[in-house]
Length: 261
Length: 349
Image (cartoon, rainbow over all chains, first blue to last red; front, side, top):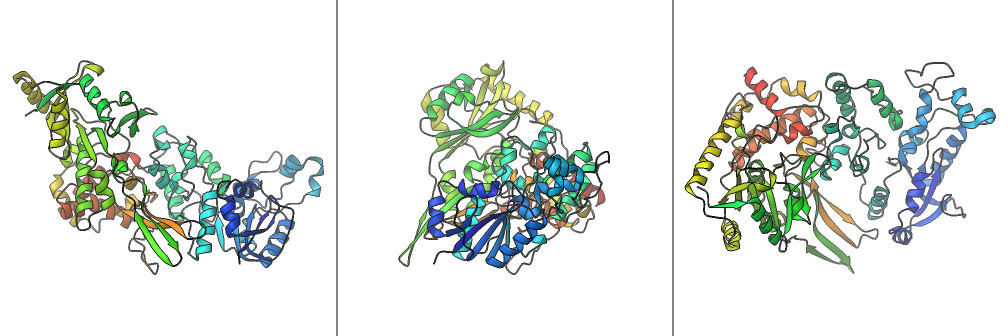
């Protein structure tokens, strides 16, 4: 019997769900290998007998928390897809917003700041209570995570293939620089740009540097040691504003358990 | 002794003719830097390039390549090797990279013959271009003895007379029968005169003076220096900055390590075995079954790379493991510099 698959969304843009539909050339093969039984972005029917559940979006409200516990109950294997579900993602930026007139808090707050809620939801802000934004692993046990903003759809395919073949799946545990060099790119550091490639987990095939943008670390940090080295280099080697680089680190990586430089 | 004199104009005509039979790979300007690229129009080659950001190894030993494809139908297994035998020519290879290719040749021939590398290599013609002066700051090819090459090429070009970009006249040295046949059968160029030979001698004298030394020891003494430096505090002190990103490995023209894995389709019935560049600075490089890692710390990996480049590869192959091109030093986003490491170790010792 084909494995029954579901794709769920919490707080996020659902771009990772969309990435699955963008696997246009492989979609028919995929549907030949698995059965999709619950997918808000792609179908109306809903079934709760699920083998593998994929979740995009962060836990950012108490409603999200309830939902993700429900997903966990119903799925044999639970997979976080995208930066929001895997790392907290850009939702965590709200932790660094201060109240009106206040300086931005130096350390992450609880995310329940009235000011940004008014900014986002306008007059009805009080209708939308939010919590601190968290990766889903902060609420439930997660079996696998496929980070990235959006998730790398080729990696999703490779993950499903591994699972079907009974092979172990592991994320690359080396930096984006490896893939960037393999593509023969000119290193952005040669242009004086502080790119997060050296501290960021590979697997994206260095798509941003290849097209001239610095890596912003959407796949999360590759290791605590690399972040520690970044701290040393930012202070001793590079002549840049530490604040700008910290802002880059926070864009997707605010939640991560590494000492930021 | 020169074998032939050839004007750049004639050279480009010859390369244009060669392009009908071979893929042409040479230095092309992009983003104010030079890269080895396959060119459709030989006019885009720029032989007055300073240095290419990466060596030409990617064309002999691609970043990722399929070794064989496999099929599993009805309980039978078939595999089909993938070999790339398309003829190619590297046009514009500096002596450092010629030394690097010689090392790759040795490594992929030694012990286990690597059919994939050798298939490409045996279909490759190498046209070298000598360096009159160091291509950029920080290179230490003269220290490593790799700023000139007397073998490892089919043809070597010496830019003897340079009266503007289009009027360079090259002194030509043949390195193989294929190179000699290519030039002589074309009937282009001229026999070197006594004046050309004198110009070549002058060129060699100027070149010898133009390459400063950066190492405080002879390259032959590096293995012994490293023997004494295994427990130096320098490794930890330098590795504080190291990201373990592998940029040094991946931009090195002599690094040849690779990893192997299988890719299959969703049903698992067809697939391919691939290999891809690996690097000894990457954390899991020395991890073995069961999870033990022989070099879990950045410092031990940094030391390992330096030992390979300056000691072990030389001991194993008799050839320079490092060709002094300084690509690793330029690629290092933490600005870790191999010449500084050698010199600091020499100071400690």
